[in-house]
Length: 218
Ligand code: AP5
Ligand code: MG
Image (cartoon, rainbow, N blue to C red):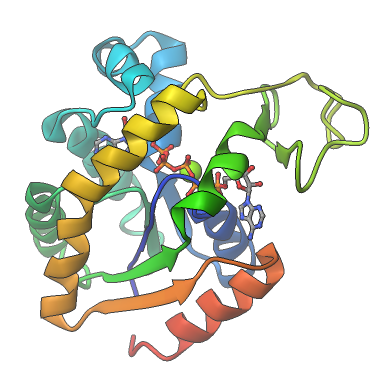
């Protein structure tokens, strides 16, 4: 089964993806993470994406699809369980993903939407901190590191994402409502949409996610 995790910024896509990869063996790609790595490495895609991401807008479909195609091409023989976190995010990307999976004779994906009300998202995003070394994730409000600014796992330095400033978060939420929500509608019409509530502890949300995907035929 191939799965798309969908939901607004801060809904917990990254958190739940890591749990699904660890516990259910999915091969996970976060297009946001891949783009941030490209920005850091100063690749062509990264240079093109940097300012767009800092404004909270969407990176052009062709740039992000190339990253996805490279990933699927690399791992297609090693897994039957891809997990795409943050792709597709526009209706053209829905069809680009269909084509890519069909070209490799891979199964059409299900879309799992993590539903969280907007007022819950802001503290999750403004409070998020990430270890620069091992990428462990913390939240100063809900799950802080033991020592402020220091990663519990590797002792690295934790920092805020460039797009987690309040003004940029509001723009990301606007973009989600206007450009991303039609993606959900497309999967609803195909009968390949599941929605779970993302409110509650990370483990409570994982139980819902896991139950929802177990109910989906392979
Ligand atoms: P991306 O990195 O995907 O960002 P996003 O969609 O805005 O989502 P986030 O990563 O901010 O949130 P999340 O849902 O993963 O939540 P998380 O688990 O971290 O994309 C960034 C940018 O890249 C985009 O804006 C765009 O520019 C570009 N991009 C990426 N893909 C693209 C595409 N396909 N097309 C075009 N452009 C693209 O959780 C958030 C916080 O909440 C954390 O602190 C976490 O610890 C906490 N938390 C999680 N779950 C819970 C819980 N149950 N209770 C309490 N706290 C929780
Ligand atoms: Mg994420």
